Length: 317
View 1 (cartoon, one colour):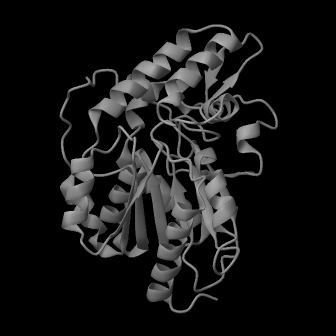
View 2: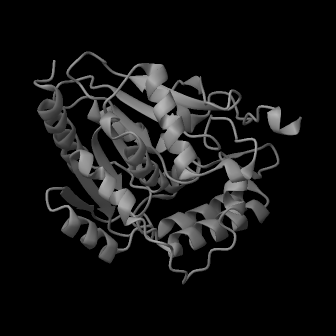
View 3: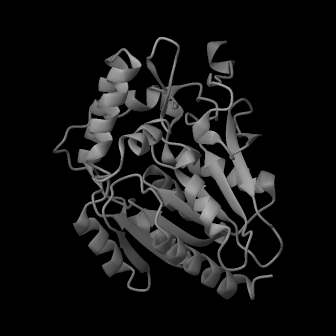
């Protein structure tokens, strides 16, 4: 009976990372696990919504700044959907650890789009979210109006997985808010050079909250870390180029942050070689996840979205 119990995350009320991101919940096909969905904008005909999928252990707060600025560009109030996949943010945890996979996540995205009555859409996937987008395209090509991959590709860099696991395990062992915060700043400082202590602290609150004893509590299912416990720094992970090739069904944009350890430069270059029609862009001076705090990259994404939607559906309304 334990596997039938819905596993909800306990969060403080009015958690700051989710300010301005109210959600509804959509039940997945297993009949008991809920995704969290934030929907905004004008979903009129002629506008393909942008569906945003966060990284492996991350949640929709990574797209808050993007959504706010993006909606002020071009034909304003463009439809945007932010999704917390099961095990992340305000979604339920999956009943069993081995139920977590990009294939299952992709089907949940398809079910969510059906529940919201949208499709085709432009999928914006960061890290693991990009892998979900590729799996989605392989299974549901007619629902893909375009794809934006951010620090994501058919070959995942094992260095990033290794560092993520070790950092999260280190944080879990610490006690005291000051100690934990200082450790977060050291971890994040290398990915975001020049950011203030306050900015780094706010970044840490996208993946953890602090309980009354000053202990960092994850905004994700810790079973996700168990699934990557055996990956080593120098492992060579299996390439999934057929999944990347599935993106040929629609226009493609490929983004890479300069300091990422999730997507190697040589993989990025091979992706652009295989898809010379793709829009490619490097975001300077930051690592994963992209902060989306510079207008230039958001404007580039917006241009891709508006152009792709216009070409697929006709002039935006």
